[in-house]
Amino acid sequence: MSLIEVAGLTKSYGEVHAVCGIDLNIEQGEIFSILGPNGAGKTTTVEILEGFRTRDSGTVSVLGFDPNTRGHQAREWRNRIGIVLQTSADAGDLTVFETLNHFTGYYSNPLGVDEVINSVGLKEKEHALIRNLSGGQRRRLDVALGIIGNPELIFLDEPTTGFDPEARRAFWALIKTLRSDGATILLTTHYLDEAEALADRVAVINKGVIVEISTPADLGGRAISQATVQWRDGDQIKSEKTDNPTAIVSSLAARFNGEIPELVVTRPSLEDIYLEMIGGVHEQDSQRA
Amino acid sequence: MNKIPSALKLGIRRGGLEIRQFARQRESVIFTLLFPVILLAIFGSVFQDTIAPGVTFSQYFVAGMIASGLVNTGFQALAITIPMERELGALKRLRGTPMPASSYFIGKAILIFVSTVIQILLLFGFGIAFFGLDMPTDSSKWLTFAWLVLLGSACSTALGIAFSTVPKSGRGASAVVTPIVIVLQFISGVFFVFTLLPTWMQQVAAIFPLKWLTQGMRSVFLPDSFASQEVAKSWELQTTFLVLVVWLIIGIFFSVRKFKWERD
Image (cartoon, rainbow over all chains, first blue to last red; front, side):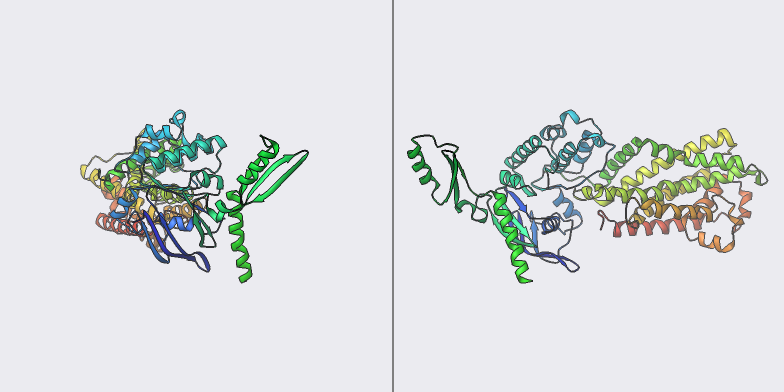
């Protein structure tokens, strides 16, 4: 049985069909990323899985529970998940340490406060008031609050928005550590490089349906798509699209008798593929209309 | 695997956190706790006559100030601050944890009770020092005072949480809630002697808890001879108790049923 099982999920807000039949299985121990433009149905889907919203139809099981469960069972369920939300501006009058220490009281088997503060890199800020933190530090506190309960499943919603490149790298390393410690992670993000760096599998959602589920490397036939070989020939930059880049490179190597000047071999980036995918759905849609 | 902590234990833990957070908002602390004292200073200085033999207006006014302090500190504060917490996403974050709603409510009740008690002590100190406030000597009066503060504080907390779903935004909450409280204060005998109000106004006020809290507090701080000057010619403590219990139940019912963790 998968950790998260979703079948035939739908949700409408009045006339707006936010989610139109989504099927999804997320396995134990994986980092699964959901990609999609704004308004694609990402947030609605994730918030249904988090138990923040009700669904119109379909079945949903998260850690073996229906997220709509209420009462004591819901507490037992929430005890096993961690949620890092998009926005927060609360509790500015408490320190980082006080807030985390308070949250440990909500869970049956929390992580140590010092351990968590260190892992998100807030050691030198632990006694600072939250309202005096920078945006990136505050975001790291959000993550710390999401993992303090030692969750089996972590929801991360746009976790690195507003991070500088160095902080993002550090954050990615933290997420990988959490996974290697046994957690399953569901990541929604706008950043394709983030999905590529972290995710075992990605789902692209557009217009309330899943366009494709695949590994980042295979998405949209990326792995088998044509490569581009580019090199310098005298004062000219030459390039060639090919299914056999290795053959071209070795013939070039023979021709130049060793090093090929300014050699580059590329395949379409995840971003190229992604834009093509969501653009494709837009086109189909306008044809229908 | 340890068990998840009980709702009561978490509620007490939340109460501690709420008090700590409140104490750090210095302006809000000073204003909330000293507001009744400031009003007593103004009204006590303006109206220096006696309203009955041996009963100063200050004495009458302290009873009203304690009663309306219960409403200000509980109902008004919560109906304004909870929508703000909701808007800032603080409630949604809590919703995502195993902490139940009941713990959140218990935490608020503790905060309101503690700040109410501090407020009353300040009012006593100031009233005794500057306005010749007579404290009751009879232990049965102190017993009445104790249940009025406990029940009044609980009732005010529950109604504040229940009403927190009414304001559409955090910023607009104050504009919705404050006028309601001010009107209630005027018609419930806080600022004026209740029996001087028109009958219809007295009848409207009698629907709401503040009139009963104020009258109950008069039974504590005014001589028993004054009871004959009340509308019903008595303190009506049993009715007061019943009205407060009914409002408490209404408040808890709507808090549990209608509480919103997120903006729509």
